[in-house]
Image (cartoon, rainbow, N blue to C red; front, side):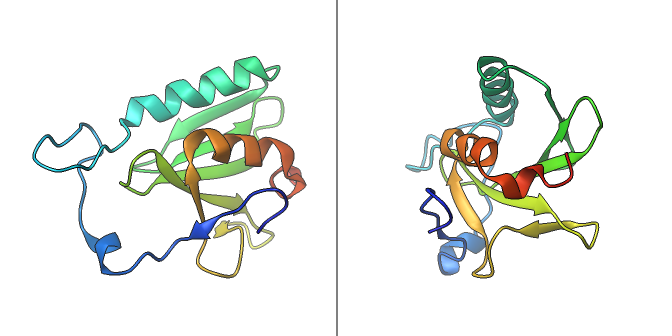
Length: 127
């Protein structure tokens, strides 16, 4: 439990090593992976609904959130390939992205992840 956010462990066993096509639903399985553009759209909608001021950019798979006014890093959202779940990372004093806990990271669906980032002061240290 991190603040008011219950995160599931990031390591889910051998299935985490399977590769998923995040660009579309695979009709031959029950895997409904989030589309990459959906992360951007939901991030922008959340930002607009909460007053704006946050930008994002994509670097390979992860999406990086930053404060528009200062370009300070806020959080990194990395799709896991399972539904709409993302692994959340924060900017560290070591000047790199790190998991937000010591137990292998926090994985949440995108909407709760954005809410957690908005309300947890850990992400706003550099802002």
